[in-house]
Image (cartoon, rainbow, N blue to C red; front, side, top):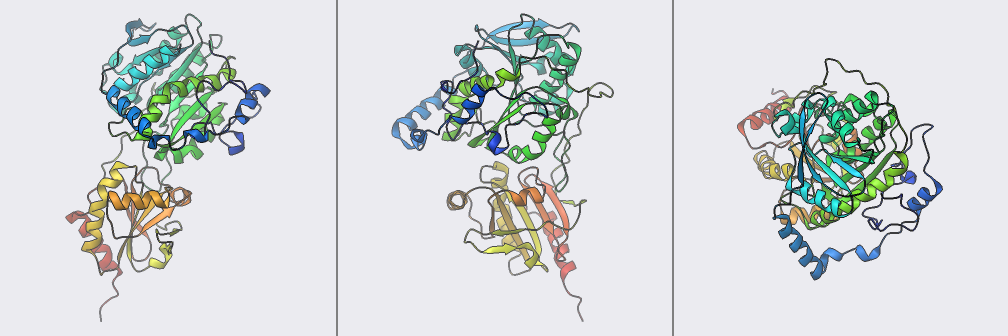
Length: 486
C-alpha cells in the first residue's frame, strides 16, 4: 500500500515544471463547498516541488535520442498479456478481465473507446512491476459491441457497477482509470455502485486522461452538452490533460460541472503532447518520452487521491429515463448554413509579422475564419486546399484568416517553413481568448462570413475546400456583396 506523498517524498515522479499538478493558487485544484481540506503534510507536498532544470533539453542529447529510439523499437513488440479472468456478475453477464497481479492497491482500467490496446497492456505490466494490481476490462467483448467510440454510450451502468463490486470484494483499495470516452462509462458505473452500496467499501478515486465528457460535438458556435452524470459524481478525480488537445479548452466548463456533485479535483496539464500520446503511431519524441514515464505518473496520481478516497460518499441522485442515456451522432462534415447568432464575436489579433488584423475592417469582403493548430492532423490536411481556394479567388474581395490556437510564434513559423506553405494571414490567439469567444469546440472549426459581416456557413472538422460545391457557395456570397449595377 502506498502512502500519501510527504514534503520530502517525490520518488514516484519528479515534480518538475512539466509534470507537477496545478495547485489551488492556479485555480485548478479544488474542493467542494464545505469539503475536506488536505492535511498540512499534503499541502506541504504541493508547495515544495521545485522544477528540475536538469530535465530541460535532455531530448536533444545523443544518449536521449538513442533511448527514445530503443523505446520506439520496444513499442513494436507485442506486450505480454496478463492472466485472463472470466468474471461473472450478479446479473449473469460475464466480463473478460486481463489481470496483472501485484500486492498493492488495485487499479480497474476501462480502456479507450476502441478497446484494449497493446500500449494499455504494456502500461498495465509496468504498473504491476511497481506493485499495483491492474484489472484491464474488455467491456466491448462482454456485450458483443464493435470497438468503436459510439459503443461506449451503450455500456450499462449496472455492468460497470457489478465489476466495481467484484473488484472491491476483497476490500483492497480500488482506483478507477478511464481515458477519453471511457470516463463516462466509469462515472456512471461508479455512481450506480455508490447508490446501490451506500455502506460498501469506498472507491479510492478516478484517474482520467483526456476525458471526453460531452454527449457530442455541437454545431459551431453552440455550447456542448455534458453527460448528466458529470454534475452528479462526487468521486475524487485526478485529471491528466494533454496540452495539445481541444479538450484542454473545455476545462472551464467541465471542472465547475464536476464540482457540483462534490468532487475533489486535481488537474495536471501535460505540455507538448496530444491526446492518445502513449499509443499514437505518429508519436513525437516528447510523447514517447512521456509515455515511458506514464506508469509512475499514474502511481503519483493515486498518491494524491489517497487522502480523499477513504470515506464513504453518497453522490447526488441521477435521474435515469428508460435506463441508459444515449447521445446522438455527429452530422456529416460539410459546409452547412449557420443556425446560431449571425453576428460574429470580435476578432482582433496579431499576425506573424506583428500587424494587428481586425475582422471588423474586412466588411465588404467574404471571409473564411479557420481555427487550427499545427499538432492537429486534420487541420494540416485541409490547409493545402485552403491555399488553392485563396489563389482561386485572388484579386477578389475574399480573405482567409487562419487563427492559430495558443502556439508560440516560433512554433507556427517553423511549421509553415517545413510542413505547409500558405499565403493567407495567420493570426496568433496566444491565450485562447478568441477561441473561447467563438465557442470553438473541435479542431479545425471554420466560419464563412458574408460581405455584410454575418456568419452564413460553418462546420467543424476538415474538408477539401477546393471543390465545386465550395466554389459555388463563395461565388454566391461574393455576388450578394456586389453593388447593384446601373
